[in-house]
Image (cartoon, rainbow, N blue to C red; front, side):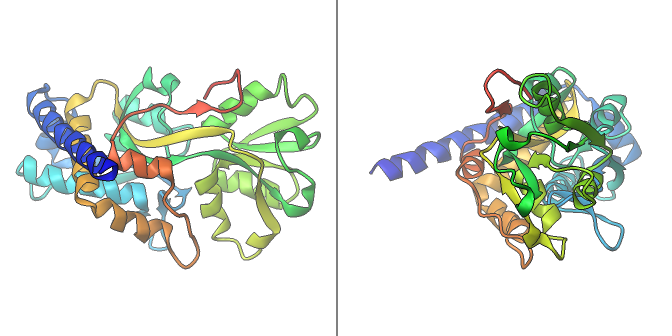
Length: 304
């Protein structure tokens, strides 16, 4: 009976969100959508190597879980705006570029692996959560590093413009005084530093590290060390106060969650021959009860 009531409660919650999204979509003033109607083009920011969320595939096309969700948004806009020829164009951005590109209007929405944080909410706006990750430390198995406390010397590779860069910049002054922090333009470059022995550790979200490892022939030589250092709810990013477009995105997500279609999309990207990432309890909860929770550091006294 408790299970039935829980499912009923979840169903009612999602139904309420569908109504709320529809009302907001109809009532908010035109922002990006006015220009999209005029140009019949929407610009999507994607990442180069945030596999399996957002990456450039072997054909040079934007691909991944987050990209597919944004493509579903475009399909909805074609119907709702009565623009069957609406075109989606893509621009590839780095971690450091993604927020400036959204704020400047060069991109309408960012479909990558971006964590919703309170600090970022001051600059941009976020959709409902699409995935929940957690930060871990990638290192070589023979490094002797088992957690944060055992990184006693050497260089730590960081990806520029990420929550891991922000957290470890804070940790440097207290927990990591004997180590050097070095930021790289992308996750790929940070991984290369670890591979080349230029760094002893590369902290990043667990699923992104798993995605990077899935492309390496010697992946068995590496390990994700220690406990989770953060909780990272990923979301689609739009300009701050771009209410109409954000409502269209939320409505699309809620319908994917309510119909169960999200499970098929999830399996397509996270359960493959080279990558196995079972759906976590937190991610499943994000689909059952859509929300916009912000991420947080699990290391007491620090923020993302």
